[in-house]
Amino acid sequence: MEQGQSQPFKAALWMCGAIASFTFMAVAGRTVQTELNTFELMFWRSFLGMLIVLAIIRWRTGEFAAIRTRHWGLHLTRNIFHFFGQNMWFYGIAVIPLSQLVALEFTMPIWVLLLAPLFLGEVLTRRKLIVALIGFIGVLVVAQPGVQPLSSGHAAGILAAVAFAVNLIFTRKIMLHDAVLCVLFWMTLSQTVMGLGLSLASGFTWPSLALSPWLVIIAITGLTAHYSLTSALGLAPAMLVAPMEFARLPIIALVGMVVYAEALDPMVFLGAAIIFSANFWNMRGSRPRSRA
Image (cartoon, rainbow, N blue to C red; front, side, top):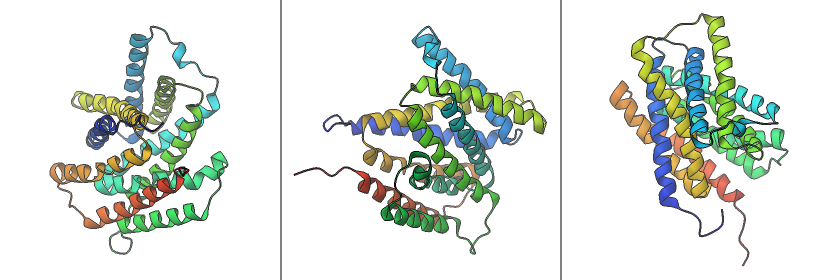
């Protein structure tokens, strides 16, 4: 983005939409898991999301040429990792406090810089290793091993962050060739198939009528979160957008306290601040230097 084109106020409004989407999705995801497992949840989320994407394509273009792609391998790899990460995320919100899961999720950019040499051939510099070390310290502060018992939810949070990092790397590759609606269509279609297959293998359960509104919320917020975040990044540099996402932690912590009586743990906020500082320092180091 060239200087002078940045629109931070509009970007902040889109980030409010992204934060609201992630928050509603977390609450709805925890509610749905009183009846459904994560595979069934992902099936309904993806199936309903696919119907919404098809309706949008039909309304906007009147034809389905927008979903054609020649890069099947990239889409398949991306969607396998995204499906795994989303399952881990939904599992995590059901077994650990929401604030802890979000704090662990903030390690995703650190995993991107560690995995980029493997998938993109980028150089792993000393600065990036220091960033990763600082981020790992932040994870230890959040999880507090030895002070409180570690659970499968903490592992799920880390695995979700790793999978989302790989997903982001492959999304960057795909966006060089395909548009957003194409990415969303193949994501929802492939994950509908994966969710249905795994749901049938584990014993498919039909949701009760009372869960229907929550499933619709999950499907809609899954799309709006992605669209809002992408729109924000299109209006302002990542250096401005990234600090806005940090507001998600206190908001989700307050939701956890009010709705689920979860305690506000200052160590979670401290660890998240360390993780975020590492990410922010890395972004500053990656910014091109201006010439005098």
